[in-house]
Length: 123
Image 1 (tube, rainbow, N blue to C red):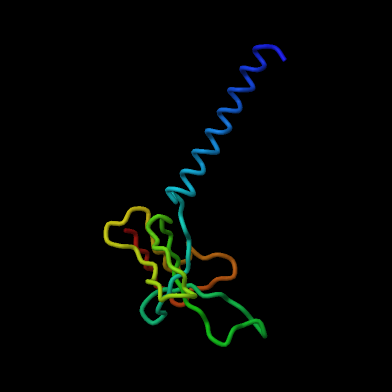
Image 2: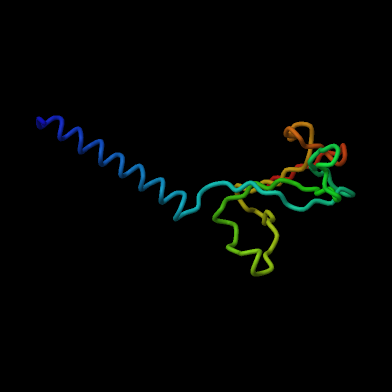
């Protein structure tokens, strides 16, 4: 292997290791990514999502929910199997936190809205 090939090989190796290190730091150490989760919703007062189904596949009780998008580093560590965890909410002034209620624009396949009103909160 000539000298230019070795230099190119080392540069490529250093860039690869740096890329892996930066990605590890961002996602594992800083937890800088968005978590999307379902949170409870009251269909009497809010426009809620629920899964549409027909026949024997339908559960006895319909689960109404809203969607929250929140940065992982703002979510407390808690094991729901062991302890009582605080619900996911957007705190006042929290950046990159969004609660999405059901509307025609936010529906996915297999979902329906509990009411026709539209409410979207962005903090």
